[in-house]
Image 1 (cartoon, rainbow, N blue to C red):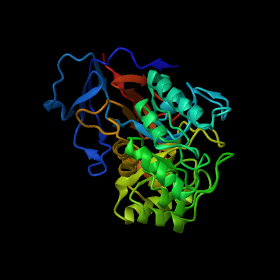
Image 2 (image 1 turned 30 degrees about the vertical axis):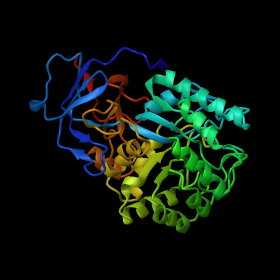
Image 3 (image 1 turned 90 degrees about the vertical axis):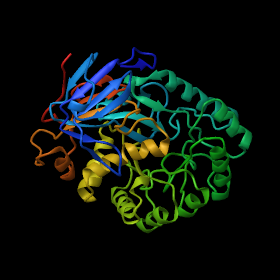
Image 4 (image 1 turned 180 degrees about the horizontal axis):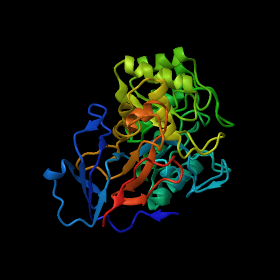
Length: 396
């Protein structure tokens, strides 16, 4: 299934009877609210039903006391074109990930394209093409922010100015190309930042042919905006070096599913101890050699919460509001003016946890009953999660 961005608007949508509302805001993860009103894809009201304008909706959804949360934002993916990944020769991976509650994906480089150009003209052309393609075409409605060039030696500031002028706003993982030295990376990261392009750096051992080890000293010297897969993708730096990065850098701490789980827990704990949980963002780093993981974000949330002994409502913020703020997105939070990218969840049937949050803290992934993007329902009960104990339904 694939859809363009120029579809009909949602009209007025009323979501009522919400049992638990997760805000995405790490400073206030749970809202005292049971109703959300949407108009043409944007949230216009959040609160108690008695205080909201419920008149004249195009659509009314009864949440049936399930949990409403911002749609998950995967901060680290490697798309190519459309809903196909040559890495695993699989079609429909983005649609399948929608069924895992993901409404936005952010490219860390279109590195899996067969014959990916490494000359400067070619890499710029690929980035602009990918940015345009995913801007114009959303697989199953999912917002894929793509067009992330992998920088190579020989690039000048003008190249970054050209990319920015063409609409490119991301860099692919620094270190996947020929730029691997800290001083080289620092210069190009600074040029990118000057022209409004956000950067991510590869952290850890090599992941694909042509990449290499990027150690803590290179990460610190490069000073990219996001410490990409700080827990390795797949091979991690030592826990001591990862904790040093958390302490010495002020940049975003990105933890991924396709990385070292022990180091992921160490990074999360370090962020909590350093009192900077707002810096933690989550991604899958997929598709990868280990495959496509439609439930990768939910599995990562459950792992960090259960084994890291972190409140589940806090970890959901890592995957929503934290990422939205660091990435500059108008989603990831349930608040007025934000895009109505939402996921309805409940505890999985027969989970030992009596509530959704308690079940996640026990290590179970939730069941998804519905996913909405820009106020439009994109999938009903997930075909990939375990069945939710309760699911919402559309009243009219």
